[in-house]
Length: 155
Length: 155
Image (cartoon, rainbow over all chains, first blue to last red; front, side, top):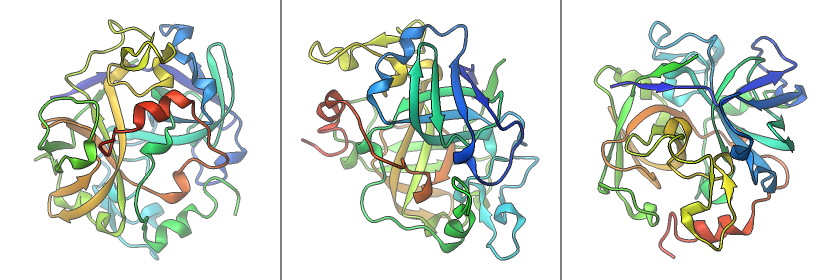
C-alpha cells in the first residue's frame, strides 16, 4: 500500500540550505500552489499559529539511512530510533512544525519558526488548536533539551 | 511533483468507524509495519507523548471535497478554508495528532487520544518535543472551542 501526495503550497525562505539552528531568525512565506484556490486559506488569520506539514525533499529516506542512530551523530547522546527523534533523514521524510502566523495575505502566509528551506513542498496546513496540544504531564529526555537549545533561537 | 508515502505502522483501535467525539475513551495501539525493524522505536519510552502522522485513507480527497466549507456542516459556524480547519476530507488526507504514550512494547505503542480508526496507515511517528509547541500568545476562534468541547473527552 502506498499514497501519492501532491504539494498544496511551497516554502519561500531566506534560508536555502539545511542548518541545525536559529530558525526563528529566518524570514519565511508559505505560498499556495497554483492548483489551490485562495479560499483554502479563508479564516486562517483568526488563528495565532499554523501547523505546517512538509516533505524534506532533499533529505535521505530510511532506508538507506538507518532506523536508529545518535542524533546529529553526537557521541554524548544515546542511539535512539528514528521515531524517537525528529531528524529529517527519516521514513517518508515528513516534517511537522507549528509556526507563528505573522500575516495572511491572499495566497500566502508569512510565518516565524519554520524549519524548512526555500523551495520545500508543503503537503498540508492545519490551524493550531489548543485542545490538540499534549495533555497531561510532559516528559522528554535531557538530550532533547540540549539539542533544542538553539534550534529556534540562537543559543 | 508528487511524493509516494508508504505506511510505517498501523492503527489498531477499538473504534472501527469515524465518529466526531470521545476519542480519549478509545483504546488504541500503533503497530510497526513488518518492513520496519524494532529499533525504530528505541528510546520512545523516554517521552510522555508521540506525534502520530497518518493517512485518513477512507476520507475524501480535496477536490472533489470543497476547499472551503462550514466545519461539520454546522450553520452556526462560519465557512472557513480547509487549511483553517482540521476536517479529515482534505488535500492529501493527512492527520496529525499528539497522543499520550501509555506503553511501548517491542513493536507497538499503546496510546491515548488517537483520533484514527482501526486499520489506519501511519506514515510517521515523532517524539513530542516541548520546544516545538506553539510559542507566544495563543489565539483561536470561538467556533473551534465549541467544536472541540467533546472531541477528546465526552462533553
